[in-house]
Image (tube, rainbow, N blue to C red; front, side, top):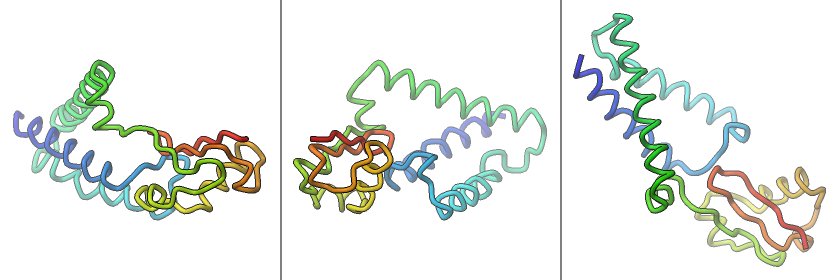
Length: 147
């Protein structure tokens, strides 16, 4: 049983790091490719979580371990801002006074069209020069501050 806990903890940390390196994107902004990737990842790690233990107890232990780790990470992130910044990142200004900050946009693997899409959806803005700031939030959404 302890091997289920250890494997679950290792898988949690590994998948978290892999997805964190993958960039910011909210569930609502997932592409079909992102969804398929997550489904494949979940299937690929399923066997490594419980190995040959197909019992209900083994499955529940794996789920409990994953939820416990998630709660602990959340509590630690809330208590220590440095840990929160490390795990969740910080908001990033990607456009200032109508001018895209291309180095930041490229580093975030975004396109100027993503900023325009957010501007249209949130503010009805259709031109970059109508935007004072565009901010890539920690959760992957883009906030628009009009002029």
